[in-house]
Length: 313
Ligand code: BDR
Ligand code: CA
Image (cartoon, rainbow, N blue to C red):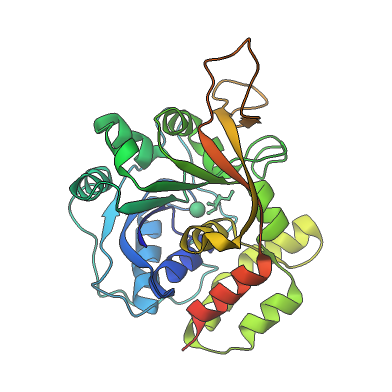
């Protein structure tokens, strides 16, 4: 499978890149950077360092995209540490970013080979929204759009109602869900259900003692400390890498449902909320059609196996 990953590279975003580079049968065609987790230029360096760490220097072009959301400005958070990588010494990246803008790179690559390339959107949806506004035909030319964002139960992680990616740029998310892409949605609710590694699972990875398992151990240190405060135990959460694993290996998906997904942009309490309705909203609202498949459950064991394979020597 051929994949473009749109990312706000920090923490779990990097494991997703590692999976896409190191899973047999997967080709990471390009990485595009979007506003999100940490300061923009740091996200670029994190992506380049991850490509270096994976042994893929010069093989995966990195393009710079939106430095701010569409409407409401956003200051990066510190929940992954100031650099998003728990302050580890990163490998020195030999590769530098491309000069073409990420939005143009997405359009050019997708339109050159319609139906061939999947996109994994694991950041706020600003770049994808800008791309589809500039070239609406990409909605049908992308083979499949995998999105990490939203919640399936109104329990958010940045506000009580909203998940981070959709909260940062709900206007962009709304544009993307209304654009006609073939979408699979992987929510924060799914992360908490299927994308958590507990101590024994983490120890399986740490015991590998390979360069990439050590990279994972060190980069995940601050998020594990944050999790201890939030959830009472130092688990590791994998919203982006679980989504990537499902994209690379859809057999991991144990249950999913078709849905009408709408994104709240205006609510005082609910900005960024993802309303996930059943396929038929009723005769009163015939205009709302199914626009996504929502993953409800995925195999944590299968996901862990893929991560360990990606971190092997
Ligand atoms: C999402 O928000 C970001 O902090 C993570 O990288 C992930 O994409 C989880 O809500
Ligand atoms: Ca992300």
